[in-house]
Length: 106
Image 1 (cartoon, one colour):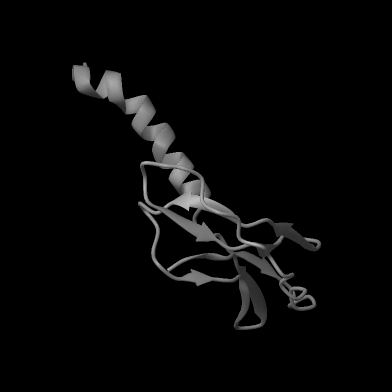
Image 2 (cartoon, one colour; image 1 turned 60 degrees about the vertical axis):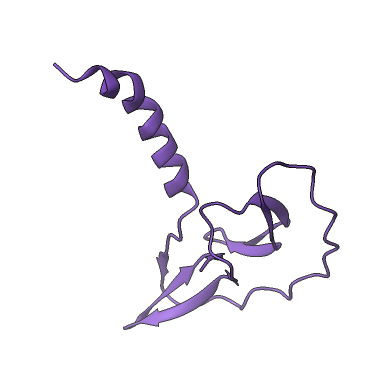
């Protein structure tokens, strides 16, 4: 039988962990790099919302969707759990294949 703390916290901890992993950099192998991402459009950074938590601006960025790029608008994020530098997505060559590395915090 599992301890009481596991039964009470196990599922929420698992769900929280999956949410954190959902934002990780996941790479997708492709036969060759498609055209580079379009230029980043000018973005107006709005004032941060009122929050007791420190916030950081996550800039808008292009994400590769397997058959084209999708624009993700910038947004204010809680600073906790993020690095301080933003890395846009990019392609890397691994042998004969190319891999997209999504935008992420460093």
